[in-house]
Image (cartoon, rainbow, N blue to C red):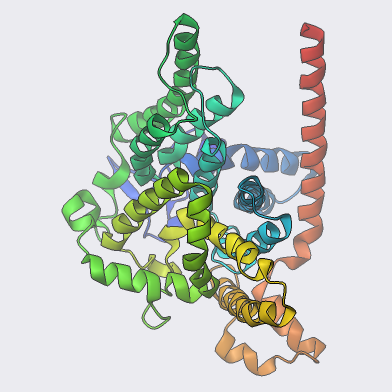
Length: 441
């Protein structure tokens, strides 16, 4: 990101030690490159560029302000994912109250909280997957040149630019569109064919971009960093047989039910409230049978891939972070459960029988995910050492926990100022486009 904006190149020779700690990099022909798909960096480029321009204009610290703007990217995409998921649940027939409860649990009682605060690709995986299903849930007509279909094509094609393995979903979504009775992809006349070609053009755009990046860096449009990955730590990336050599039972058990020692913390340990999603899936499945069946197949394919992955434990993050892609969809059955089980009980005591365990599981998930966030990179909480200072009735005790967990909370005014500025710019841009359209008409 910095190399693109500051130096106009893809090589990270200037920054590789500072940002990779001599671990996560690729090395080819005397130059260092990122060992990640380029999508997240591409998304961050305009944010870093704006931060740099403002720093130059007002005499601010360029690195601090640039970092501030870049870290807005995962935060905003994380927030968009939550709001989109809530909107999706409401469109599926869930009550607004249950949709908001499930959405807020996803935001603050899941590892989404942690990864929306760090510049990994996982929060973008989650957004892309939720957004694609949001667009596809009521059918797609590719024989019409509409914004919905164009956006779907753009997102689907760019998914592997964010995360290479997501390319597997191209085939799954194509099959889903062919089977879905509400979708249409086969042209019947010239007009249909022209609209299909326009949609295909939007699909092609991200592929041209990533192909250009791969060609410049690694010599061919289809060649990735894996051949030149750090040989001291990641030689196994060069061969799929060694990259995915974990016994499935071992990876699956640890990903789902692992305890903190050894890592990773399991999916259901971090998210105990998702136990209810097993119950709620029946109601979700009845509401949208074909769509849910497709989501189950895609999620199982993704889960199987990462249960076999050599580093299924997430490396230093110590959690099932590779499962973030379908985590948001797992909260939809929770919303259905809230509506269909306690929501339909007329007896208050019986509602309490079900809602009290639900509240306990939700609170446990919030606590575990808070600790998991607060002890990670960029935070300074050590529960074993700091908990001795904590007291709900002590202002200093609460301060110890919060100041160490949220070390940058004093920068909140900067964040809200940036948010307000972005809102003004968006409103001005929207008004300009609307005026231009009226003038054309």
